[in-house]
Length: 299
Image 1 (cartoon, rainbow, N blue to C red):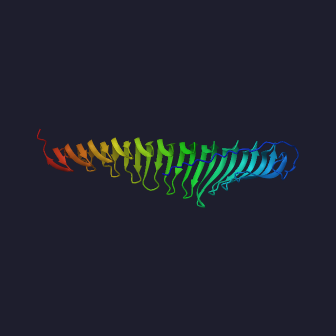
Image 2 (image 1 turned 135 degrees about the horizontal axis):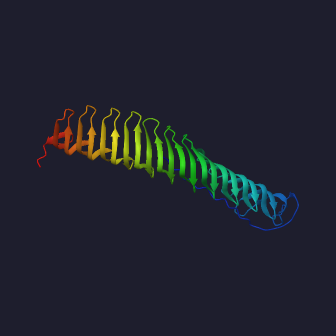
Image 3 (image 1 turned 60 degrees about the horizontal axis):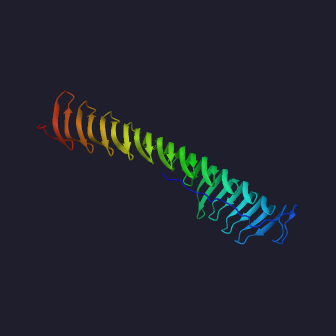
């Protein structure tokens, strides 16, 4: 999966001068005079420009602030800083619309993430200190969607991730990855219900394939590892240890015809000491190599 990590620029505005007057009118053209209770434009030394309401020589009320990097903020100001509802268009084309608090993106809003004039995705939800934080929904341009908890700009906590191919994950996340208890549903092949660790099946879980094959047991690194039981769609069954997804170590294999093998396996095959018990009670016991009976146990 893709990991969504995008930090917003903290928008902090600095006031460069202090003056005082009262009158709702156009501000004086002379920038050396007081801007108070008036509407006017001021060009700052760094090339940025503000047009809007002024009180106590500070931006207060509705206005437009054009940054030197071509970013533009339109909305409400309080004591010289964006505060309340506003819209911030970044120089790269990205757009934030929503709440600001003392010059910082905080509260509920929508962020459209652009790069090279191409929409990468849209986030709608809660922000804190310029980052996605709280409940929200992020939709990528390919149709993938995440709905749930964010912490400091990352997918973190409980949520649901739907992939563009129809696959779905419901459960816990950590730093943008599946982590903890969760359910992964493949649209074409299987369903897994169990433990995850940093994006991979890890721990104990149940894996059910669409053809009826079912595994219940331990996982490590996204593969069957440790003790488990695998029942195939034809009711053939293996119960024992696995390594990297294959029968490995001691186990029991029950065949559909009633025969049974119990003993050691390697890479999914009878290998080592074991015995094959036929349905009629006959037993072949000894050393096996790659599924073939090698010889009787000489001990």
